[in-house]
Length: 144
Image (cartoon, rainbow, N blue to C red; front, top):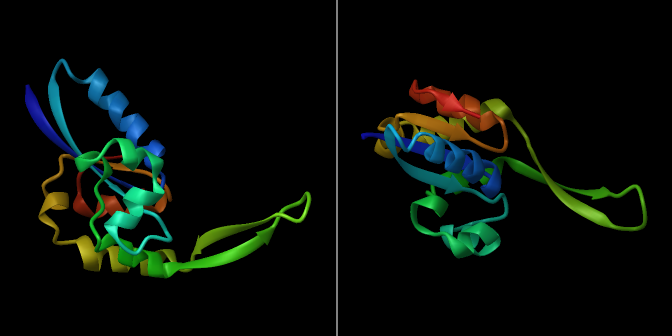
C-alpha cells in the first residue's frame, strides 16, 4: 500500500472527520491514509479548550483531534456579534471573520513553513470554506 498523508483544518469537527473517514474507507485497497485534523474553536485559547469544547474530541483524541496552538491566533480575527432571534427573546452569539485577506496573511505567516503541512499529500478543508483557499497555498490537492 502507498502511504498518503492527509491534513485537515476546520472549526467544525464532524464536517472534516466524516468526509475523511469516507475517503479512508473507500481507498483502503490502495492507500494507507495517515491523517491529522486540526480542530479549532473561535472561543478557544488553548488546545485543551478545543478538546473540552468539541464533543468529538472527548472520544477520539490524538491526530484525529489535534490543535496546533499557532492556529488559535487566527481567532483574534473574528468579531463576536449578539443576534436577536426571530421568535421569542432568545439571543445567539455568532462570530464573523473581519477580513479574509488578513486571515490568509496571518495563516501563511503562522503556518507557511510548517513541515507537517508542507509534507502533506492532500488537504481536507472544512468550515469556513476559506480554509480551502488557505490550504491551496501548499500546492497540493485540496478536497472541500
